[in-house]
View 1: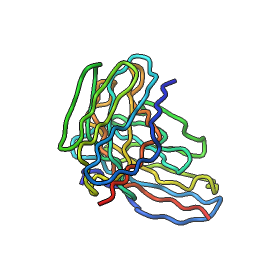
View 2: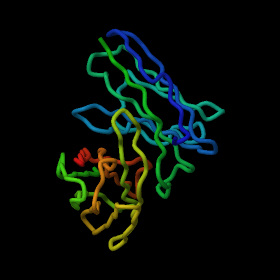
View 3: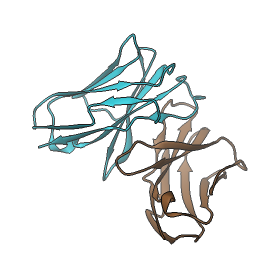
View 4: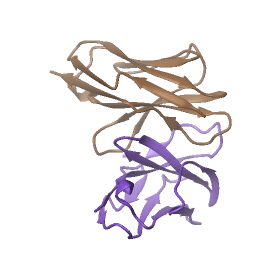
Length: 115
Length: 110
C-alpha cells in the first residue's frame, strides 16, 4: 500500500460527459502528479501541483483540468469526453516538488471507460 | 525533450534463468533514473533510484546499474512472483516530473 488513495477505481461514462477523479496523497506529501496510461502511449505525464500551486504541465488536453486543495487532495476534471480518453489515470505524490525530489508513490489508479 | 527506450518489450524466462532488462535514455542533465515495478491493474511501485554513472543498487534478486547512456536491471535466478512490467523513468535538471519508458513485460515460468 503506497498510501495514495484514488477514487473511483472504475468509471464508465459516455462520450461528451464530464468526470472528476480524486486523489489523496500520502500523509505529509506536498506534491501531486497526474499521469495517464493507455496501451499505446504508456505512462504520460499530465500535470503536477505543489502545495496548491501548479508546478509543471505535460501533454494535458485543454478539456482536462486539475487543482490541488488546501488539504492537499487533488482532483482531475475531464470534460467533453472522447473514446480516446479511455485509460488508466494515476495519481502520484512525493515529499517535495523540485528536481531533487525522490521517488514518486503511485495510487492504484482510476480506470476510465468512455463508451 | 527527454526520451526513454526500454528493451525488450517482453521477456519470457524460465524460473532460475537470469537475464537483464535495458533502459536507454536521452536527457539534458540527469537528476535521477528510476526503476518501478507494475503489476496488472496496479500502480507502479518504486524499486530504485540511481543518480550517477557507475552507481549500483540491489534488492533481493534485482540489481540496477547505470552508465551515461543506459541502465540495466539484472534479474538473478528469477521466480514466478517476479513477473510484472518493469518501468524505467528519468528526471532532468529542468523538470519536476518523471518521463517513463514503455516498459518491459517480464514473464517467469515455473
